[in-house]
Amino acid sequence: MNEIKLAVPNKGRMSEDILTLLSRAGLNLSGERARSLSAKTIDGNYTIIFVRTKDIPKFISEGTVDIGFTGVDVVEEFGAEVDELLKLDFGHCEMVVASKEESDINSVNDVENGMKVATSFPNIARKFFEKSGKKVQITEVSGATEITPRLGLADIVVDITSTGSTLKVNKLKIIEKILKSQAVIIGRKGIKQDRKNEVEAFVRAIISAIAAQEKKYLMAHVPKNKLDKVREFLPGMASPTITTLLGNDKDVVMHVVVDKNSVYESVDRLKQLGGSSILIMTVDQIIK
Image (tube, rainbow, N blue to C red; front, side, top):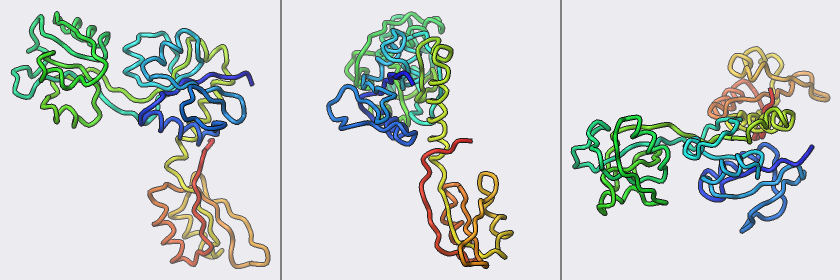
């Protein structure tokens, strides 16, 4: 397999989630990551480069790296032509327009021409207000967007929020929602054709790791005459796998994958039916 270069955010909660996901998918880093700008996986098939989230679409579009993890909002802001490989079920947030709580600006219709807009996403903001027929002054800021109205630097802001709590703390109200975002895996344009097998193998590993996050592997000794009752509440992914016990004709060994949220209820019912030697294990990947 030819080496694939991956771009991963260099800090933040998304970075931690992505590294955990890569590890579950079998892409474990060799050596210590601390202060390192890049690292190789133990198998040598991947080089992971740690960069700012907002720079990843640029690295992808220029061919510096093959595949990257970033947010939908960042991809939209950069406007790069990239291949979307997979949306991930974390990093959820919304891009919104917000004004001061006491202001008369309650929708985009209330925005007057010439008003000042502070944002870290100038391209998305510009397109939104142009589409709304509003001529505003957009000021790009690199952080602390929420405080700009209180400092008199802006009338409204365009920013990312997950819970809205930061906006409320800064006495801002949401007046419009522009887009929904989440973590996403992107690749350079055409990579799905150029390196079809490698890309499919990588995406399959990620999907299998995600599928396994909500599952547990359950193994137990179960009386043979209770198997029908066990199957009623433990169907598993298809049906439980049953193996024999050496020198024991009354019991069998049951192997089954169950939902994480129901594992303790399942164990309790197994115990009531005479189950014993019950083992609960994590599942790294599920490949269907």
